[in-house]
Image 1 (cartoon, helix red, strand yellow):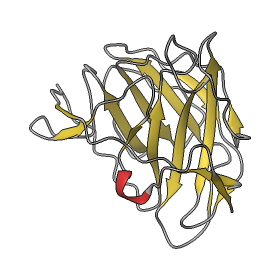
Image 2 (image 1 turned 45 degrees about the vertical axis):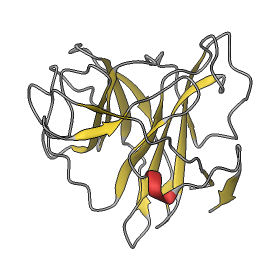
Image 3 (image 1 turned 90 degrees about the vertical axis):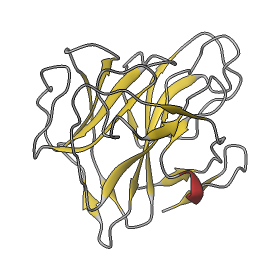
Image 4 (image 1 turned 180 degrees about the vertical axis):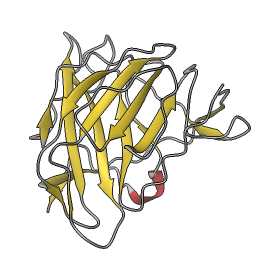
Length: 189
């Protein structure tokens, strides 16, 4: 929508172990970065955040969609409402809860929520409705994208796959090859 956070993700990876595998195959909007360490001791950023990316060829209106979070083994989902459109090749920053640590504030977000995300393990779902998900490993047509990180009991990645490991300084990113490290620079959309 307005801007994109561009970061180079370190090459750390860990093997994943998922009990069930939701398959959210979105042709357009995907979760590109997850940062749950916001405000923790030693954190770079003051807020948790999730960044969305439109990999499609047309603008997508996300009004009425939600970004949802559950703990690594949880079945109760917290929601943040989304509104606006994301142009092709552009990003959408969703700011979540701030902590007391961190040194750098986020750029102006496109949406603001109050979800306290874990910095080590959790599950994030991008959902095409405002209805909170149920269950530890939800799936279905309404789930546009899904990311389990750390020791999450559910992930979109197959059990034998690998994925980046989040840290307090850098977010977990699945589109790492598309990001450049420029501090907190963002581009207008």
